[in-house]
Image 1 (cartoon, rainbow, N blue to C red):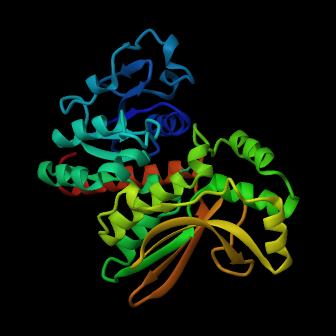
Image 2 (image 1 turned 90 degrees about the vertical axis):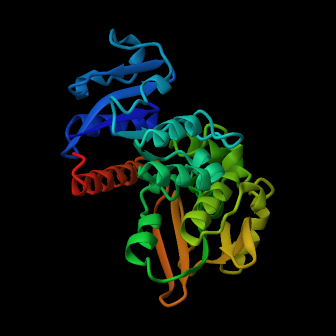
Length: 327
Ligand code: HSE
């Protein structure tokens, strides 16, 4: 049995913890969960009944930092799900470093550490022989990273273009189809639970830029930083601009592009029949490969679907470790 802990007990953490505790993946034993209030730990495995919405009222809650739980003696796998912090990646960056240094495998949905310190973290993983999987950081449940790394590893990815943020896509779609204001549509997106805790990260294009850096670095070896991305968000998009686009069979979408000219995020006019012109909370990514050519993939980019990406990465770790007889 592979022992697993989850650090971060928000929307994703709660759902994933309950799935793992009820045996969604064989050969995984969830032994610990940490929230900002402390952690719970059971050597023989946590059960769904040990996982209420609020851990504060549990008698087994230890009011200590998550770093205390990240210890090779009690876990083989860390699932890091603390909120994204784009300034310094903390506390997720420290958690991931701590795990990789001890040879503990890591699965994460946390964009901050992966966008800010990809090379360093991959270097740590390589040195200690640990795995670091981050499918859930980009495109929710859409398997963008495994699509390239597993199905198209021999081809060369030349460029990426797409809609990588569900919140702004939802807002722009509501403005296009319902003539709603940006402010009202944002409030709806917040109610759907897909907006960042600080929604200016969505609106100003920073969330899209983070995801573009992650894709470019992990799929194209681009070695880019957030500061390399030219970013323009949607805050200045007016109802009039959307109406004018609509009049000519187009709409406005927030598009991220990574190609030989670099990385950029900006609102663009897109034809309504373009394959990446998806609406609502959907994401769409168009890859251009040297041999395959263009491949577009569409799916839910946030929320519940992200749990699927986490489960699949965890399953990859289980498969790899059972092959190497570590479980
Ligand atoms: N705020 C993000 C989005 C969440 O709207 O796409 C998923 O990364």
